[in-house]
Image (spheres, rainbow, N blue to C red):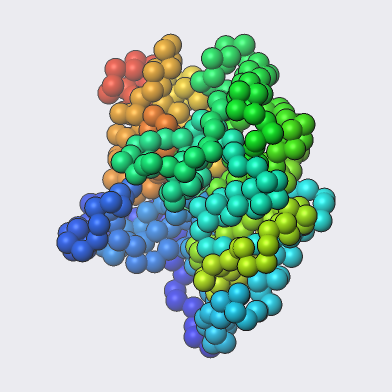
Length: 467
Ligand SMILES: *Cc1c(COP(=O)(O)O)cnc(C)c1O
């Protein structure tokens, strides 16, 4: 590399103006004049630079990043090796189209994924650009390999915004509203939500058993011999950071085997180290026949993958898979840099350390308030669910207000969930310990404040004890 690195971005929270500041407001007004209103925005600030755990906006505010661009920039948004590899590739060529002429980095990315995704069987990989494309191609592969049509998906599932993946996604507003009709052949079963399943009062084992019985009943009704695939997120993302009750994923694995249905594990949000293991399926000791990667795979350069059993991946006729940009060389170089970053295991250790720190700061809120129903998640994929303690009535109003006040203090949080009542934390795995704790303390204090103002006397007492 010939050009020198820019000054390092200070890893501290800093408020230079109100958030959003005047420059961001002016740029947002311009955006409104030119960009579709169909895109929402969590926080209308314009970013100038980002790296480590910091987003620096055009007004000079430094915001703590608890979003990572939705679980994408796990190794930081300006990682040195990613920039070096992309810069070197830029000097050589930007694109050939892998279906026209080949380049080695595509093969190397495939090789790494074959070696590191769960399952000790022989594998092949196909690369694409977006997560939705990976999901769609997994369905194409499963249908082609089995000669069957139907696909089983789950409540609270999120698989993307294309027509087929919208059909597979559970939540209507905003993802599916007014966009139908959808492709046929998608069948939905209950998820194993340990907080909200009707079996929840009997404990997590009962939740898993009830959900598995419902899967069998759903398959029986729709004809198990007509199903090509079942598609599951090992931790549900947009649907609410739902960690399935223990045993559910293993049970699905058995049901899939019993009926010769292909198990597709959508690791697009939970994979690539996010949960403290390279792939979240490893926590439950299962392997999908097909495993899907995207988001953090190439640190923000669009790249996605379907990796799975060689006999399934090769069942498709030659020419049946592809895409102009599929496995673009710049994206493949970025992915190879990500793989290097994971080599020494320290990023996975960081993910587990983030969980430990967040648990210490945030889990007591379940006792200290009447509105934090649960703190959950794995590694650096964590969430707080807001609901009234006795009725579990979702409190989206609180999640929204708390998030807004965190944003104003320079901490970027995101909400999610079927009821919009969940605040999720997806910090970059490289976030520094002090910055992490600062962001967590802002969040904790804000929760106590807002809950206290909303009439939660336990929270009000805890808040005044802090003050
Ligand atoms: C984000 C996401 C997708 C879709 O990925 P895009 O790149 O936005 O198309 C699919 N599945 C899961 C679990 C996701 O989190």
